[in-house]
Image (cartoon, rainbow, N blue to C red; front, side):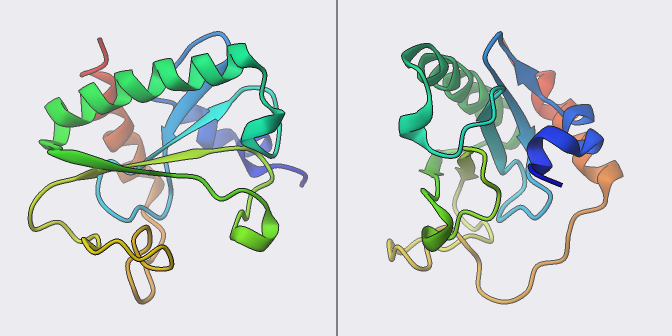
Length: 144
């Protein structure tokens, strides 16, 4: 398998929203409920590998997803991140922007420590596919 985001059918099945150049879906091991990834449709590893149009398409979906996460899960703010290369923790060689909807009392970490802020400590089990599809449905109903 070259790229999980391109080749695993379940990822496409839980797409929340897409445009001509990018798509968004809930990650299978979320830090907080609603944790969403946005990818360009073209399989490129790094941000700088994207065209100007692909970057604009990702930004379009970022804005739409954030609005939907405010409505669907009461997000009060967001963490945005991407890992840029294998040595920086990028496990799938396809650019993906993490969007973490945040609110008081959620399970994420509030301090800004680059090695900690994105990931909860300890093991996190993968979320069942049925629940991921429900999360995708909830968010997609709030896309404008």
